[in-house]
Length: 485
Ligand code: NAD
Image 1 (spheres, helix red, strand yellow):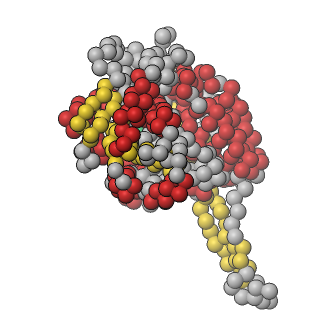
Image 2 (cartoon, helix red, strand yellow):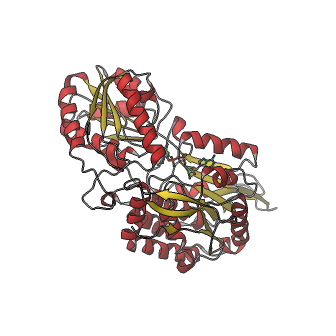
Image 3 (tube, rainbow, N blue to C red):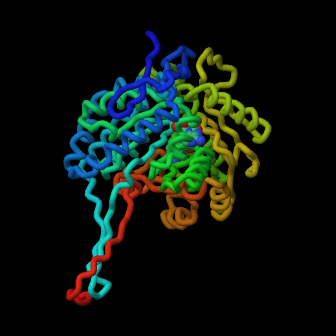
C-alpha cells in the first residue's frame, strides 16, 4: 500500500477539508493498515452544504428534465468506466471482494435511467362545477441523503439520481466505514456538469454530521438506508425539528422456507449465497432458514458444502469470494453473536473452526441449528455470515415462525407446488417475497422496501422519484365552464 488517501468534502463544487481540519483514520479490515485519513464534517460544514444546496435550487429546478439529465448521463458513463477503481476503493475500505462488485453497473443503470425519466405528472379534474382543478408534483428543495457502508455506490446512486432528476439539490453523507467511493464520485460532479451546490458530499460519523442533517431546519426531506436503530433516531430528530419527510430502508431478519418437495440442492445453494454474500453484510440476507423436518439432513449437508467452498481472503484479489467484516466494531459484534449462539443453539457448525485469520477481520460462515425461537440470535440482526437453520412440520407452523419477527424486508420460499407458493407468499409479512429464489434476487423496477421495522418507503426505478416530489392541489375558479361536460 502507498501513502494513505486524504479525502475532502464536496461543498458547492469545491473539494475542501473539514472546517476545523479534523480527519478520522480508516483502516483496511484485511491487513489492518491505514488506508485513508477521511475528512470529518462539522456542523459548520453541514450548514455550508445545505446553504449551497438551497442557493442552487432555484436555477437547477427551473431547467428542463432533459437539461438536468445531461450531467446525470455523464455520471452514468463514468461510474461504469471506472469500475476497477471504485471496486478497489470499497475492497480497501470495507473488505468487499472485487469479484462481487456489481455496484458500478447498478449505479450506471440508475444514473442513466433517471437522466431520462424525470417527467413527473399530477392529475387534472373537472369534478368541481365552475373550477378547473389540478395537482402538481414539485421538488422539496434541499434533500439529505444518508447511506450505509455495505454497498455505498448502490445507495448513493439509487437516492441521488432520482432526487436531483426531480429537481432537488442534495447533501449526501457517506458512511464512516466506507467513504471512499462517495469521495471518488464527488470528484467527478463538476466534470459531469452539475452546477455548484446541486450535489454536495460530506463524510463523517452519525454524530456529528448525520445528526445535524437529520435535525436541520432547511432540509425538507431525508432519505436514509441503514439500521433500524439509526432510523428511529432520525425519525425523532425529524419530529423534533421541522417534521421533514423521511424515507427509510432499514434492517432485516429475513426468513427462507424450504418445503419437502423443493429442489434441495438449488435451495441450499441459493440460501447459502444469500446469507454469506458480502460476508453476511446484506440487509435482505436470509438469516433464518426453516426447513421441512423430513429433508433437514440433506439440506444441511448441501448448505454446509456450499459454505465450505467459499474462497476466503484478500478482497482486492479476483479469486476471493468472501472478505473480512467491514471494521473492528462490526467484527466484534458478529463474534459476540457467535459466542452467544453457541449457548443458544442446540448445535453449531463452524466452517472455519481452528483456522488462523491473521490480522484480517475475517469471520468464517457459521451455521446454528436447533435454535430457540425466542433467543437473541433468532430475533436480532447479526449482519454477518451467521445463519440459523430450524425445522417445521406444517405449513401453518412455517408461516408463524417466519412472521414472528419485528422485521419484514424479504422472505423466500422453495416448493414445486405453485398453489402453496402463492398461498404462503400472501401470508408472509414482508415487503418482498422470492418464490423458488431468494435474496439478492430482485427486480429493479419493482418496489424495494420493508414491512414492519424494516422501513417506510419503497425504492425502485419506477417508485423512487415519488419520494422526492411534493404534491400540491390548485383549484382555478373558471366562471362559465360549467360541470364535467
Ligand atoms: P447505521 O445505521 O449504523 O449507519 C448508516 C448511516 O447512518 C451511516 O452513514 C451513519 O454514519 C449514519 N448515522 C448513524 N447515526 C446517525 C444519527 N444519529 N443520525 C443520522 N445519521 C446517523 O447502519 P450501517 O451499519 O451503516 O448499515 C448496516 C445496516 O443497514 C443494517 O441494519 C442493514 O440491514 C441496513 N441496510 C438496509 C438496507 C435496505 O435497503 N433495507 C440496505 C443496506 C443496509
